[in-house]
Image (spheres, rainbow, N blue to C red):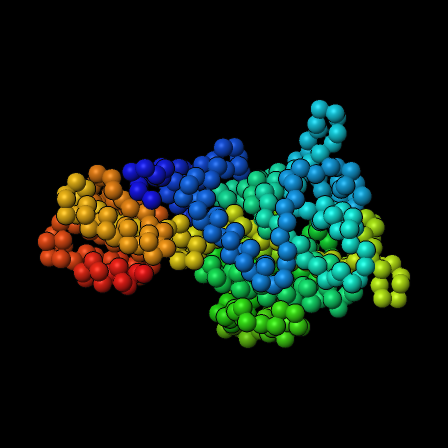
Length: 437
Ligand code: ATP
Ligand code: MG
Ligand code: MG
Ligand code: MG
């Protein structure tokens, strides 16, 4: 992409109502624009990151055996009356009436709808287990939308729903999502710690939140410090076996959110290992048995010929919130530092003297070679000054910057900078390209 033809409305100053770094940086880097309280337009740079995060989530869901579908954003109120949640949900739910006076709502979550889809076609234990998911916009009329995409009213969520015949199957399904979550957050460069959590309006008794530690996080959390550095299991696990041992490893040490915090149990952790911190909830998994299948009559016939309500769980990831969480975890005074896995472009090329034939030719050659090798490139071919180009590249946080200027070209070299370490080195164009490709 040539910057001269792109749409990257960067701001010099952060708007004064943006209180935390990630919100300020997303606005300054021209990634989002607020259209109403808690409702954002995703500008091109922001959308590229959103799409990459969504894709990582999708790949890890697929790997764990979940199947993607897409449910609508609008749902019938009557469906929610079946579970009893229509009145219980309160003012967070956006209620809508159509021209026929039919009551609708903009989905804040999809337990009811997926249960309705399931009961319409699955009748036998032979069709289980199943895990169905989608990535879809949600609306919650939050009392205090704030911190940009971190607490929006309209936000993108991945929500998966598992169906099993019995409690043992449901436990295995829960564990598969638990392990998939460890992997997907780790692929985004995040250290997300699973913590025992309250189930809130979703219901049920078994639940973990995945928490990224950050001073600006809205939740108070308590855990053993070793959990923060524990590596993710990686893709090579027995997805269809029993993942209990892996889950046990991550749940043996103390970790709880404020609502589930037990001061007595926490004080049993050696003092030097206790971490009480703030965190961002980036994912939340629940196992809630028959809470929806029973009132909504989602029954399956078991091997003994008897009909039983199916055992369910649900598993959410805050896809749009993750942009904020990643930036909170990875930025400096100059701007964002994207992990390579989610960066909007792999490489930025800075032409220090646009219009100089030798500089232009070297930049074009680099742009072509990188693009041909499958790299995504943002080429700053504008006639802005060098200093302004550096500032923009640092702000938008691409992992690599190639700096091509007349002095270097005369000596047969270009410069390469690593955004994360700040390390710069100089070498011939060919060897810099070879290092990137
Ligand atoms: P919170 O405690 O932050 O209000 P929640 O517990 O109400 O979140 P869940 O119902 O567990 O949210 O939804 C699953 C995931 O969706 C959350 O873990 C979070 O990452 C994301 N999420 C929830 N509300 C919002 C929001 N208003 N804006 C952005 N992401 C959100
Ligand atoms: Mg909430
Ligand atoms: Mg919560
Ligand atoms: Mg939650």
